[in-house]
Length: 272
Image (tube, rainbow, N blue to C red; front, side):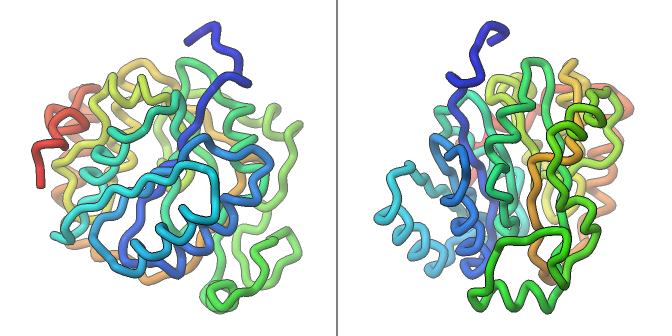
C-alpha cells in the first residue's frame, strides 16, 4: 500500500441510512455532481423501508456507478452491525463513510483522496443546516450551499481552501471528537481492527469507539479543515436510552487500549 499511486486508488462511498428516503435522495443528488466519482456506492440500511428500496432501484437504472444495498430487520438502532455487513460487499481499497443525511460539496470525494495516506484515517467536519433550510431542500431547493447561504450554522466550515487544509490539518493520536458522518479509512485497516463493535446498540459513541481502536492499532487520525466539506440536514435527535451502556464500552476500549473487536466485522455475517 505504501507505494500505491493515488490515481490508482479505488474508493467506495459507504452510506448509513434509516427510514429516510427523502434525505437519501438529496445525498444522491450531491454524489452524482462530484468532480471525482466513487468507484462504488454501498448503502447500509438499518431497516427495510420500501421507499428507500425504490429510490435506490431508480438511481441504479440512471447511473453507471455500481450501487449495492445491504439491509437488515428493524430491531432498533444497530448501525455498527449494518456497517459491518455492508463493508463485506466493498471491493475498493479506500472507504469514505457518510450518513444518509449528508449533502456533499462537489469536491468531497476528490478532497478525501487528495489527503489520504497509509497509516492514517481522516475525520472531516460538517456544516449544520437549520430546520427551515432543510425543509426547503427536501422540497427541491438548490443544494449549492456556500458561506452566504441563509439558514446554516458554523458557516466557516463552508470555506474550501486546499492551502488552509494543508496548513492546519495534522495527524494525531488524540481522539477528540469523532463522527461517522464524514470519515475515511483504508479497508485493510477496517479489517485489521475487525470493524465496528456490534455490541453498540442504540445511538452514541459507536463512531468514537471505532476511531479509538484505529488509534490503538497505531493508525493516526488526521482532522481535515478547509476541505472534504459536507452539509448536515436537520432532523429529530435519536433516542439516547442506551448511551450509558455505550459509554461503558467506549471507556473499556480507551482504558485497556484494545484495538480488535471480538464482536465485529468477522462476526457480523452470523447475526440476523
